[in-house]
Length: 368
Image (tube, one colour):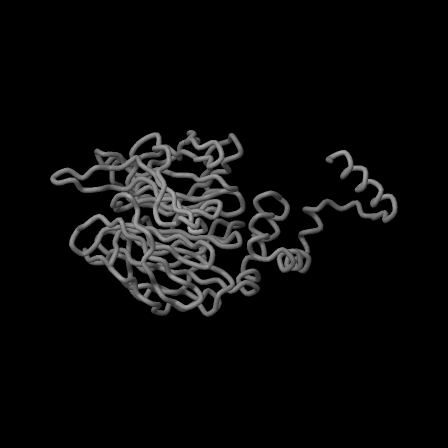
C-alpha cells in the first residue's frame, strides 16, 4: 500500500510540477498562510498537526492571538480553596474580552479537585468537601446548556488527585485518602469511558510506579503522563511516568529538574510544560520547564513565573498555555498569565473574581 501511494504521488508531481525551492518552515513564516492552514484544519486538527510538525508548531505559536480570535477560547476555574474553605464557585474567562464572569456553581464545594475538558463537557473530579471528606463523586458540566450533573463516582475518594483526558476517556490517578487516623497517599489509577453503553462505573488500571499526591497529569499524542507530586512522607517528587493505553503499562520518563508538588502542568505542541509548586524543602518554585516525551534530551528550563507560587493551575488550547491562581505566602492570588513562547515572557490577563488555589482549570474553544 505504501509503495502504491508513493507511485501515485510521484505521478501527480510529474503531471503538476511545482517550481518552489522554499522549505515548509520558510513558507509558513507568512502569517496569512499559517492562519489559512489553521482555519482549514480546525482547532483539534491544528493541535494534532502541531504535535506532528515542528514547522507548523512554530508558525501556529507565532499567531497565537489570531487563533484565539478565530476559535473563541474560554477558561473555567472550578472549585478550589480560599481562606481555608472549599469553594463551589466557578468562573469563566472569555479570552477575547479579557474578563472573568461567574458561571454555574458546582453542586457541592470541592478543594483539591481536578477539572478535565472532554467531548463538549467539563468534568470536576474528586477533591475534599466542606466536612473534610475525600470525595469519590464526579460532576459534569454541559457546555451546551451550562448545567452540572452527577456522573458515576470513582471507586475511592481522592483529594489532590491528578486527572486528564486521553483517547476519549477520563483518567484519575493518585491523590490522598484519609483512613482515620492516617492519611494515605495513593498509587491507584482508574478510567471512565463516557462513550460506553455500560458507563456506570470506573475501571481499575495498573498502579502507578509509586504513590503520588498533588501530582499533575497531561495527555500528549495519546499517551498519559503523570508528573511529580509528593509521597507518603510529604516529600516533593521530581519523577514522572507515562501510561500507554494500548500496552496497558506505566513506563518511567526523565525526571524534572526540580521536585514539584501542587504545581501547574499543561501540554502544547507535543511538549509538556510545568510551572510553580513547592519543592522538597517546601520552598515555592518559580521555574518553568518543558519536555518533549519523544526526545531523549530531558527537561529544559524555559522561563520563570513572575512570582513563585503553589496551588497554581495551567490549561492550554491551540498551543497557548495559561497559568492561573495559586498561593503566594499566606494569600491566594487571582493572577492569570499567558506565556509568550518566543520570548519566555508573560502576558497578563484579568484577575480571578475569587482568588483561589488547588482548583480545577479547563480550557475549551468554539463554545460561546
